[in-house]
Image (cartoon, rainbow, N blue to C red; front, side, top):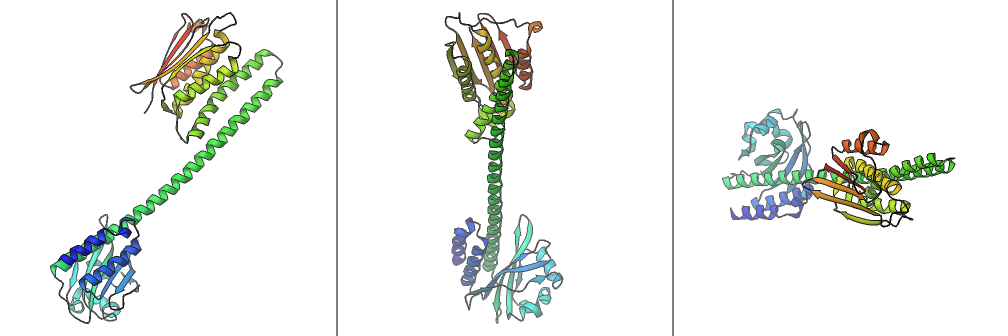
Length: 378
């Protein structure tokens, strides 16, 4: 019994088993089994998908120390034997040529190979029979002991485990290829979207240069700002390697700095930025970015004038209990926030807040303070 346990232990530690190298593990198992049991022939068979054919995976002969493959066995040739395999955990034949269940094997398998004693152990995976492991003595009768029977069943379980490990490795490699292809595709899409945004910006600049009055020039500039705010989201996705979320705090800080470079050159505005690094998905980031662009642009265009002694603009983003709390504040001239006086900018902000399923509060005393809150998934 001790040598059986040692063989099982050695096979359990095999590199081939744990790496899913099924063919190499099969060779090792058949060789080890033949030596441990002093068994003349050990072979492994696997069913085709419909279980109508047993294909020889590998056969090992102890006397020659060689491996080969036998001819397939079909259900048409051996209907009773196949049925018996499906119904039993173990088929023990001390004298295989006298057993009625082996009658179909006599002419084409037992006699040509001089097999006298045989154990057949069905291989099972996920409750389904997938093949059979055979141990055979030739030219002499052998009584299979209980220890040998348990040993062969353990070998069958190890071989089934090796096959399952191979399948898992195959699925894992296929999944990794799919993921890699997906990442390449997403990267390419992000790159193209980024380029398309740049083309749109260039077209808007061309149209702006063709305008003949300040009103239409400002309209195009306003659209360009909105496109740019969305392009910054795409840029962050592309640079961070993320496919579905951005760092909202970093995005808002970059947006404010860019707007300050564009509109704040002559205003000398004191910027106060305090943002948490909050990751939000694209469905939240885009409307939030458009809201921020609208509010900040309005502050630069309308809150301050050259008579302001010390213009200030504050931006804060705080994450608390799954809620993003975003505050914009300036100390400018303020505006009339009554619904009847609401312009298109405030209407856009209100509509976008609804997209976020958020809430917005506007105060216009001593400048403008706008507080936006919305939930997001961490």
